Length: 339
Image 1 (cartoon, helix red, strand yellow):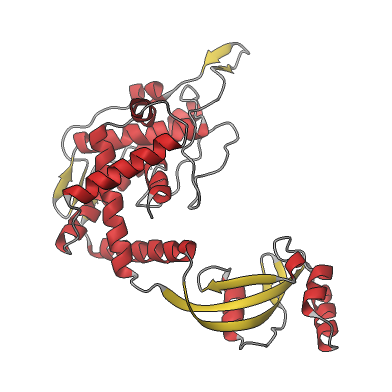
Image 2 (cartoon, one colour; image 1 turned 90 degrees about the vertical axis):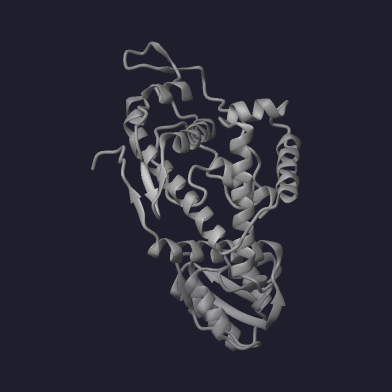
């Protein structure tokens, strides 16, 4: 959960809360940032103008248009276990989030439908800020700390990774386009380091039961029964996978999926695979992808690969935060969107 995860942390809107963003009216996006090999998105490349209702060219509205619609609020916006969140705590994250979604999706804030979603967007950002306040409270209570030397090293690592991406000519350009100050960036890095610490502590194991399996995926039950009959007659599993399987990622390797732990496959497939003993073959297993015939080749405790370990730790952190939030006193005082 180093550089690649911090890119996610910095550039999506709700890194800790994990809530869905409003569905803005945008040009076709490249897709939401995922959890693997995430490049820093380039600045928006949408046209400088967009057709108006009368066919004339209307300038595309950037972040400054959205910010002009934002009305500061006096007093506490929210309370987390009694700690107040005020506008000065909320505004920097709102600006960063607006830059992120505008650049990534090319949101035109001159469009009325996007402006109508701005209050909902503000509500989600406020929830994210509340979650981050709770994170700091909880980690302080449980003794997690980021010392100055570690923080400085981590900040430099992230700076180096961002500049090495080739998307920015200088650090100042990145900060401007990301809508952040150095201080805000450092705070996000510190939060990411705390998340790392919690995730590793709550998921200390680096091993898990795994199976080495192969499968044949077909579209219909009839075809599946045909494959099962041929297997029962002694025909080769790999040859039948090459002939029948509709899974392009494994059919040419005899249906081999390699080793995988729990939490990797869809539930129905996973339940069947882990219930089989090595050398045995399942009946038809239906999932949203079709009908699977699964054969387990090996099963044992194994070290998790980096991606599986990262996934396990992220899930451990999410479970911990969900459990703690259930007993936390989080009061959202200001609601920007009307019901």
